[in-house]
Image (cartoon, rainbow, N blue to C red; front, side):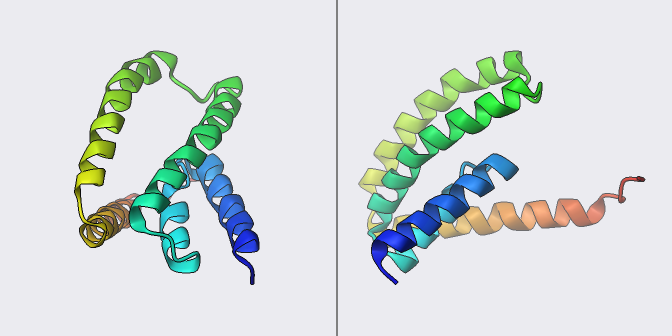
Length: 127
């Protein structure tokens, strides 16, 4: 399969996951680009963030139109998130690619396990 086709499929999967789950697609984009396209971790994370800008804007707008955005909370979260995004990008750039890959993997696995455990502890909602 060509890299272009892989890139298109990665974009579709990440965009769908971002819109459906609100994860921005980064948990799809980064590992897929590293594993399937043999991209460097730094380049995969940068490309992922660039793609997430568009995905986030469209997904956020769609959820806002449907009344699924608490605007005061989003307004309070956005400014520090932007500042932290700059800081995180500089920190990531300072790390070796292998270290960055391990940190990324640890964070993804940690949050996945936390969500799985939380979902299993909740009682099912009644229909």
